[in-house]
Image 1: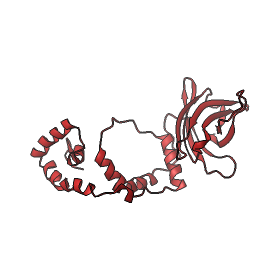
Image 2: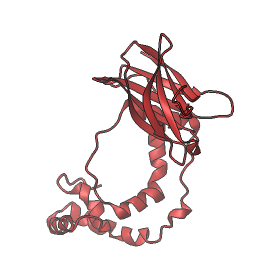
Image 3: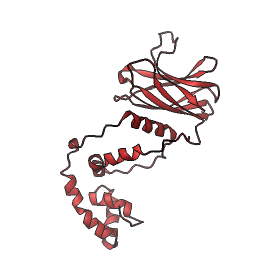
Image 4: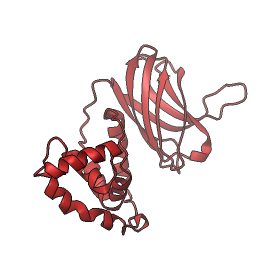
Length: 231
């Protein structure tokens, strides 16, 4: 926000009173003597009063197209940004909900659409719904780990009332190897990291089933998603 290299990133939180007490005190001293942050803080001083007039309910979230959701899912399994320590910005969140969400969607819409893979995955797959009447879909990337293969899955359009789902790696000889189970959120989305005891080249198909096996544990459940790996 401010071109000040040492404290510019804290200026917005300072104006909104959203910093920790120690940071607020540090910023008060800094703003008093900084030729950049001082005028900028005075210029932004009207923001708290403006935020008090914002009604989040009046700003409905944008509706993403299926194509955009696919791009988001695909990007999720290819690139995960490193976790950063959280900073509490209670009122900044209100700004993002009111005026920033459209810009975020536009930024996601222009994500690269190439087929480049991150260095950790050896194959990827796009999973489509099995059978008619479902718009479920998913993307997956697979990584070699000591126990076999880690499957990173991101899905949408699942029935959250359907209980648990299970991921299977289908070997070339027809054997199904389970990677474990997961559940969908109330909006039908799911993100899961699962591990299956298979190695690269052992399998070429990933299947997601509804975990409705019989009481003796036989069978694989009802297939809901299926896709072939791209090595």
